Length: 279
Ligand code: ZN
Image (cartoon, rainbow, N blue to C red; front, side):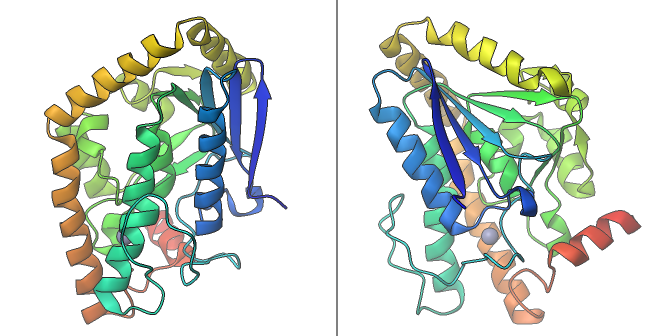
């Protein structure tokens, strides 16, 4: 089964994560398939807008930290960075090289896609899933959607693409991270993190209606407008801020590796869920 589906509906390309049995947990195979799909959409002159979707009940449960398809120890042809292959390296060197490429690097690359992107989010949008929604220009969420970054439970200060204080006000970002609680779609709308909240059964129609409206704008105008806003965010420190937090993130991974079972403090999807349910 292909881990990412690609289709075109008029001027809109739809890129769909397709591991519904694992709530679209993102392994490296999916990362590179997403990159391939985005590249294809950018190269196609008929495509004006790109929608990123998740098959099934959930948008994405985050990075793959425990499915049978987990492939963190596999080499891929790197595209987002010039870091050497993480395979065959040890400790922080392996982790830093890998995450520079598949997490921070890929997300930054996708944020710069020169066509408008819309995340169409239902159900869970957790940790690595948040990164995928955040790199999109707009987010349309169904009323059953929820957002969470629970990695502080692993002793880690947020996911690799640290957009939290730009995606929401800093004090809200702290609460979001300190508690690891689920932020419902309605609350995400209130704090300005998502553009629309619609009924679950209307999610697709509303998202495509918005995409069609945007598609009527001139291609270069859209590309330049996107760049203008992205540059403004970077002038507000987003790019440099993420680099500095990436260092803290890797300090946390290294501390975990030094003092516990592994770089994730011995946590897996099961123990993360149990901890969340018990609190
Ligand atoms: Zn990490």
